[in-house]
Amino acid sequence: MMRKLSLVAQPRMSRPVSAVLLLLATILGLAAGCGDSSWREVAAADGGFRVLMRGAPRVEQRNLDTPMGRIAGNWYSLEQKDSVFGVGYADYPAPIVRATPPRAMFTTVREGWLKRIQGKPEGEGTDIKLDNKWYGMEFTARGRLEGREVWMLGRFYLVDNRLYQLIVFGDKAAIPRSDINKFMGSFKVAQPRELSTIKIDPVPDRKK
Image (cartoon, rainbow, N blue to C red; front, side, top):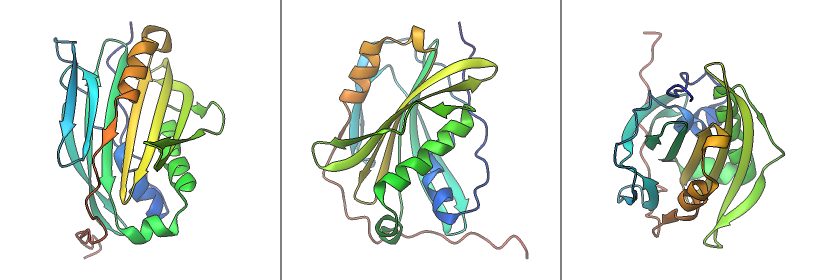
């Protein structure tokens, strides 16, 4: 049996875009899963998505200070005995999206997750689409966390200015593939709202 899983604090990145894209890879300590393990629909109106999870997830929001300003990310996570299932999202200005190819964005986000499990990807990742419209990438990786071997499966989707992340990690042998397929396959997004005018609060100058 694995111990309760947690991720280390987010490492510093030198590039502004990398700091933004790694926002959702920052996770607080994950609470133990709810005793009720029945499947239920998690619908986030503000996040514009719905997904099936085996229990009630913990909901967290964290502000990340980046060279471009302070950006908010949201994370819904459910820890089970040998695994963690999570979905998160963050919005950022349209100029960043226009200046960065989707594949490059996904690869940068993946690198953040790999660092957290001291892992390596299994292959280059697979190009996917959500609803035959939104670009995405699926990847798998192996690594170690708290001295134990960890397997990870992730899917990223770029929906207009919003980046979604679906992550499952833990003891691969103990995670039913049917649970992974049900979780990943149930993810749906609503028609995105206009995000091109997102306001980012400036980060206070720490040198003063």
